[in-house]
Length: 332
Image (tube, rainbow, N blue to C red; front, side, top):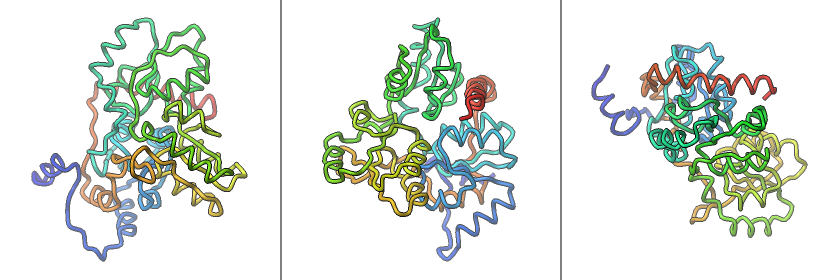
C-alpha cells in the first residue's frame, strides 16, 4: 500500500490525485464498477452528478436495506460516515468505501458515546431506540435502531408500558412522542442543517407563494414543523410531491433531495426553505464533501476504506437487524 496515499487520506480525508480534465468520469466509473464488482449507494442529499451515477438512491432506511442485500463485493457509499459504517456492519465481509472519510455528521457528533453511556445508566429500565444518524458505538449500545421513515411505527410496535430512551435527535424524538402519545426520554442532540431553518423567512416565502405546499423533515424544530402541510422522511417528502396535485412546494430539508423531486415532477416548482443566514438554501457541508472526482478516485484506488471493530459490528448489528425485521413485517 502506498504510504503517501494513506498519509494524504489521514490529512485530507480523500485520495487527492490529478485527473485528466478530458476524462469522461461517468464512463470511467461505470467501467470500474464492472471491473471491481462494485455498487454505488447514494443518499438523496448528494450532489446531482453522484445521484445520477448511483445504482441506488435513497434515504437511510432504503440504503440500509440495499447494503444488507447486495451481492456486490465492493460498496461505494456516497453519503456520510455513519451510513458507510452501517453498511460495513450489515456486510462485514464486503469492502466499504467512502469517497471522503471526513464526511461526518453534526447529529452524530452531538452524541458522544461515552456521555450517552452515562445518560443511559440513569434509566436502567428503559429500552434504547437510536436514530440511525449516529456512530457505530452508539448503535452498539442500542436495543433498536430507527430511521425517520419508521421511527413512529417502531415505537408503536412496542408495549405501551415500555419505557424508552430516544436519541440522538431531540426534534425527531419530540415529533415521534407527539405522534405516538408516548413519553420518551430524549437525548439533547440535533442536526445543524435542520436546526437553522428560519420561521420568519419561511413565513414570507409562504406569503409570496400562497398556493405552495410547505413540506418538512421531522428533524426540523417544532416551530417549523407546526407550519408544515406535510412532515416526513426524505422518501416520504419525495412521494408526497409526486402524489399531491399542488404545483409548487417549499421544501424544508437538505436541498439535495430537490434534484430527485424535479426529475420525478418536471412540471412542478420546488423552492428550498431558507435558513437563518445569508444562504438561499440549506446544504449539508458534510454530504457535499463527496464529489464525482473523489468518487472516481475512491473506486480507482480502493480507498478510503471504512472499518468497524469486530466487537462493535457484533453488538451494533442486532439493533439494526431488529429495525430491518420490524420494517419488513410492517411493509416499510
